[in-house]
Amino acid sequence: MRIDFQNTETGSLVTAPQAQPREATAEPAPPLSFDIPRRVLRQLVLAAAGYLAVMAAAFRAGEGIGIIFVVFGVVLVGYYGLPVAMARASGAKGAEDDRCGAWGIDTASGYLTGRAAWAQIMTVPLLMLAWAIFIAFLM
Image (cartoon, rainbow, N blue to C red):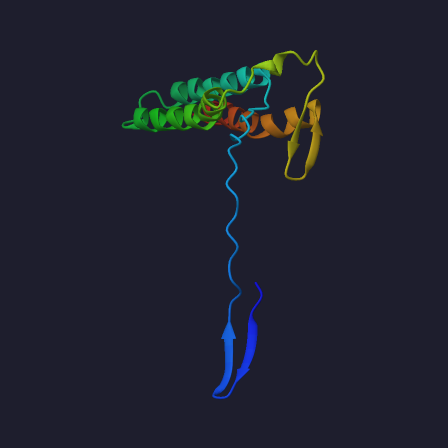
């Protein structure tokens, strides 16, 4: 922002420049893309379902544990389902399975190849599943 200083007879005067109005563009926003292939999304869902199943089996008699699993399930559906729903609502095309095996994801740290992206996406869900299995053996 530019500030203008003017010297007058009574002292200095500080003024801001006149704001120029921007022209409105009539271009619609680009469609959202949910860049995860359906195979990886299915693996995420299976890992989450496996976590819920193993933890439910381990804590089958726990009082009030059902509400925790319901909340966890709702969070998972929202976390993975909301981006898919938003992408479909914005008119994005479902061409994610037409890649013929070669895919990657642009992230804040740069482009990741398919294997690196899979490792980044699946690390936490698989660790959660491994933790659930470990807890089930302790119970």
